[in-house]
Length: 266
Image (cartoon, rainbow, N blue to C red):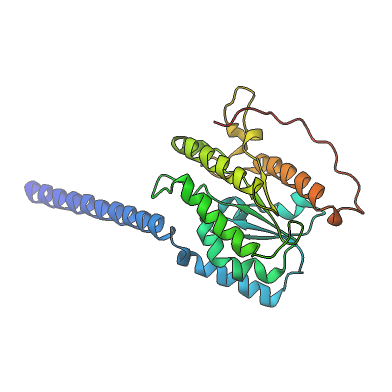
């Protein structure tokens, strides 16, 4: 009798182990699928359709500053408050690559007739899984800019385009060199392209000894926390308020913020 119970227990234990293994493989397979599929623009079609539904029920005012890109923009829940009184519209989606923003720009950027466009993308392009080289990120950004600022626009014509640097995320230390190279190329491209500007949000994230200030990021080491968004909000707001003075001419001057550490990029 005891032997029979022992055999049943062993069979039950084996079935449990096999089931756990199948579940682990299924989860792993799903994660691999998500990582691969999210590299294609079509993966974000649902989020884009939701933006369009919102535009029908609550049409945005024309002439705002459109923020577009991946997770940094999508998760910036305090954007309107951090950029006030500048009129802003958040159109960040998923973990968008630069090429994904370009693919959907005719649907979620151009229809709003923006005064300016702020782009934050590139980190996911350069990530470890299927990472692109910096040259490809630069080429994709050039393609996006050509959509936002077609031939014939003068240097002062709208929309002005602002490219944010790719920050050195703590979880992606192995890719910091690629991030730095891409930032160098994006900065040079912006300097050579009328109506395009580069905002370095990376250097102020470093401590005096050149280390990344991890207190600016959430537990995942990839996304900003409130302190991180407060920092980049100050940087972006100050630059836009200076350049796009028509938005703030009637507003009091920006208060002086705390000094930001300056150190060489990693």
